[in-house]
Image (cartoon, rainbow, N blue to C red; front, side):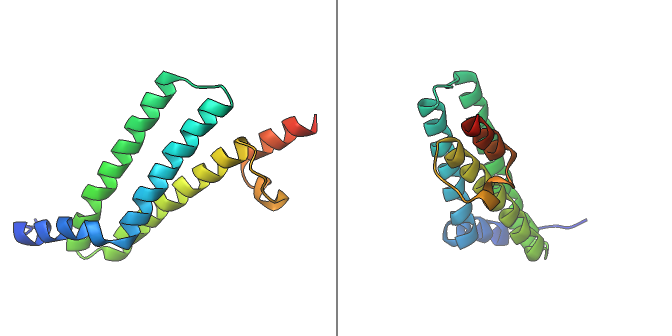
Amino acid sequence: MVILDNGVLLHEFRSLLSNGYLQVFVWMVCGDIITGLCKGFFIKEGNSTKGLLGIVKHLLVVCLVIVAYPYLKIMGFEPIATSFVFFYIAVYGISIVENLGQLGVPFPDWVKDRFSKLKDVSEKEEK
């Protein structure tokens, strides 16, 4: 059984504000929310149920990362904690690219070929 010192835990939670990885993660989440809202507005597929579920999902992921990161770091798993944050940065980056592609932002063909949502958009444009 591992017993954690509350002072160390409090210090780790306070240091989250200055952690560059987590700042990038939070900005990626905000970017995904903004591009998702723009997509819903401009493509005229706005749906309050989808939007609410999306916001709840984003908040749960942010809470998961903010709680798990300090605990993993304290227990000596900092590389895993950092990989955990990088994974979510990549997931949100992919989502942002998909949202921008569906909004009509041009991407090279090699990018479109790797994203199924962008393939669907480019196939619709060709028809």
